[in-house]
Image (tube, rainbow, N blue to C red):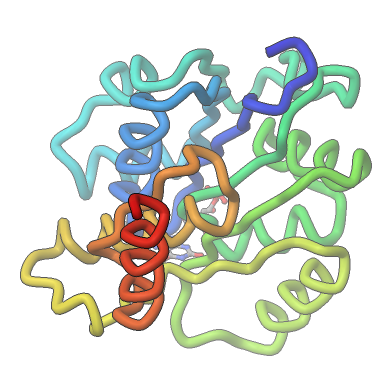
Amino acid sequence: MGDGRSRLIVGISGATGAILGVRLLQVLQSSEVETHLVLSKWGVRTLAHETPYSLEQVQQMATHHYPPQDEGAAISSGSFLTRGMVVCPCSVRSVAAIANGHGDNLIHRAADVVLKERRKLVLVVREAPLNDVHLENMLKLSRMGVVIFPPVPAFYTHPKTAEDIVDQIVNRWDGTMSMTGSPSAETMHPRVRKRQTGRRKAAQG
Ligand SMILES: Cc1cc2nc3c(=O)[nH]c(=O)nc-3n(C[C@H](O)[C@H](O)[C@H](O)COP(=O)(O)O)c2cc1C
């Protein structure tokens, strides 16, 4: 789509939970969304450490991918139209770089562009516990309209496996970003699921 409405930049930085970024790409693969992927150096390290996927396999899940040092990539420019960007997972180092506008890789530059163009930015920030610097950086970004989205599991879906937890988090993100338009009912809060099912039945007559 030429106006960028279905283009999404996906960053995977070096916080634990690389599988969240992988699952996100898999979900987007089966949609109309055109993904532009960057893994930071430490994102590559956590991917290898925590998942069975190779860098090449993950890159193939995206429509386009770029090396983190390529700050001349299309996504470095505001004239390259996108819906926005999600960094999933997002380290507190990347949060600090984005909050203070002095990043040194393409994830930071692309996020800076998304901010200056007033597009949507979602940061799946993963760190615990959080210190004042982390919290202040997140508050600063939140006040600029950034969605701070820690990958916190919900237990009302009765997850049985780690995959269930990952799916619930990624699905919840999809609902926030409205990218695929089809978040799965199994991962919703029971009351929301009930209301959705009722509406669907009413529409069917
Ligand atoms: C296995 C592993 C797990 C890590 N987990 C986290 C984490 O959960 N949160 C975080 O902020 N940093 C975490 N780090 C540290 C970051 O990778 C490190 O601060 C790095 O400089 C982040 O750079 P990046 O944001 O460019 O990827 C982890 C590092 C490793 C090797």
